[in-house]
Length: 242
Image 1: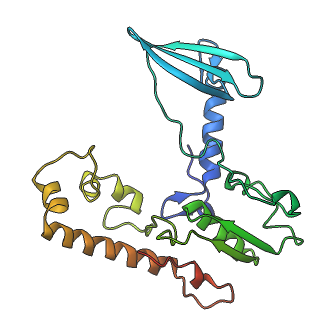
Image 2: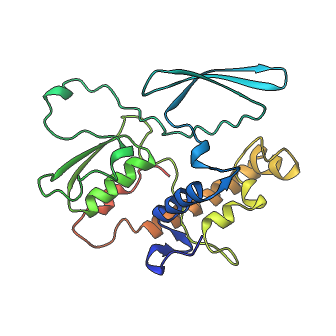
Image 3: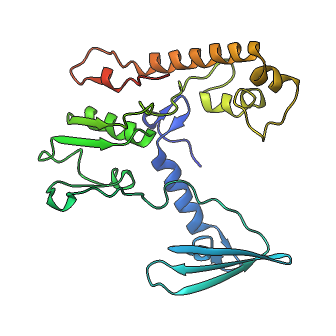
């Protein structure tokens, strides 16, 4: 994959469209035994059940567009379903009487809500990162935005991080991929040793972790610069909780 133009690169992060184009090209061009990777992919398939039989996996499935049943038998099975492959649209009473556009975040990027001069008011429902992205983009486009959150501790996106790196690491992602950084979040994948017990099971470790994440929070807010002088109201995007 070639490095994208500098205008599309920030701290060696680059716009998602370049990754998408690369994967699309890879699937179409890489050919094995006369068939490309795309030829080998089955789209619009819903798995109904999975059964282990001797040294094989048996998957019962159906095509969601035609309803036609199908079965897969394989010796290797990887579950990589992701979180947003199927949009979860809430049931909204009175939606049939609403004459505006209602869409899921999945369709936000391909819609015209930001470019249409007829759409001036946008309401974002939910407190996840995708909601924050939509609220930010809508505010930046000059729209009047209402962001609706639950009346609980859900006061904003669960996790934001400064993208900047430290020392030899170009960005936060490179830091996060190190074994040292992995120990700062409790995980069964990391394992238990004297260091993880110190960090997560002692009062000194709790204080250390608290100081570390407070620093991460401050750096993220500083880089986001919610209080920048402008007329767009970015300060309202600042999460109430750390």
